[in-house]
Image (cartoon, rainbow, N blue to C red):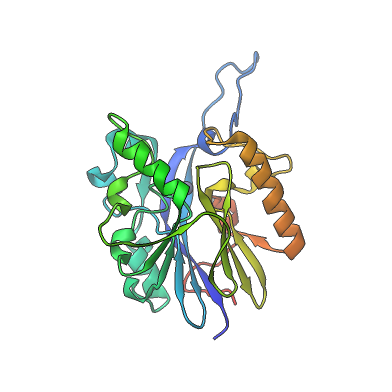
Length: 266
Ligand SMILES: [Zn+2]
């Protein structure tokens, strides 16, 4: 079987546009209080099937995110909604798959909208950037009254078969991951070679089309702003070099142009 991939629609995260794009509507003398925009962003996962492996890139939010699993402050800032057909299980079922069929989980990073469903995938090999895991543990376990994006209960599970990544790594032939600077200490981008062409999944290193530009637009909150510019150049280079399709992680306008599960890109 040649490699194929499918995009999973795992619900919507509602948040202030200023998290995605810094200074989206700065005040001016003539408009001292411009309206703030709150938007519904897609939460995505990706299934890649090769001859030997079924790889899931990102897992979405935990189903109990808004039922007390997230702190009240986190849930108020980023409210998550998923229809019954947008659960991970329902989306996998559209492809004729169950969580048990997943052999490898790639966590682009450990924020709550990407690493929320590891519990259902404990049998799989879990790929993560080592520096991201270390940072996430330190932040979430040692910060008093922590209300940030790392929900350690989502992924700090006994007996997980972690596969630590420090640099580029091959998950299977034609499916590679490599770190990108900017958003968090260790964000993994996935690059997939299909018969029809190359797909790039930069995760939150490049939130949406406007983030890439030109001109690039950094997010409102960032771990490494110099690294963000390096990432923009790198993703732009890879796109142009491979004539690749970039699938942005939180871009409602792009999602409207994509086909999601049960569609397979081949
Ligand atoms: Zn995200």
